Length: 408
Image (tube, rainbow, N blue to C red):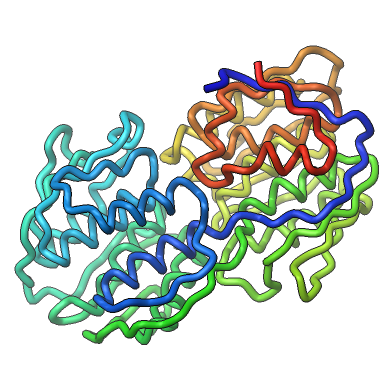
């Protein structure tokens, strides 16, 4: 396995058509819902991302010990899935996964009647999951400012609960589009829900078998937007994206309009073209935190000042993404600082020609967010294989549009 790769582009001119990976957010929800239905559903265009392939394998596994590796959705969704279906499992993951909190979800599931014990440190995996005895409780209050994956995990099992579920989301709702994506997919498989104010109500119901085709991944598209913004000339078509999408990261089209990319929606997907960019923008990432790294790396490279809010959940991802960004933008003569609680400011500097090497912190998004900077000068990406988590073909796709990729 290569420890690093060197990336460069001889002309800075990009043209081509790219078939993006499928959305792992959609795919993983569809897999859990299909499993909960107990019937055969036809799922098309399932993501090649490691997270989705892993979830597929684990749902078919009879093993008592289940390794969710570094996949947050897999850990959280399976915790709820195994709990409500009464399966006895030991659910674990990588060292980093066992440092990511899960207490909010475990406490909620216990209130509903699940038997879950911590094997190690309180509030963190590994988890010992036992039987399920309905508690008769259907009213739950959950903090909604940490991870929407907890909420999605609870919603997907809600129709199977004896009393259904009335979920009250306390505080500012983070990643709301991901919650709405979950409810839309539940509806596609025959389950209705009511989302009014901060309360989501799901009555006891049965999922129905259905056919579903997973859309291309808007998160993966974000790196291509960054590539177009940094290129000297660009005309890139991304296949399989929809203007009306379940995915919150569809917001990248609007964000990048300000950062130098025009989006033309076509019957095939989107066509990306260059335009003028603004010099100073303010963005709230509450609904789309996975886009923050792309925007920070691009803005630091292109010289755009950005004021940001809605980054709270980034500290509990594959790595502490805020800290990782703060370290890596320093080599671009930029600084990322928390100016007041919850408000971050990126101040770009003058990019100097020097050897640039970016660490990835076991985080796929760090690798792909900084890769487009190779359009400005040759760069090194450390531990490039991390992209397998969500976009295994990323480096090969860059070669299709003229990038030179050298494994070191």
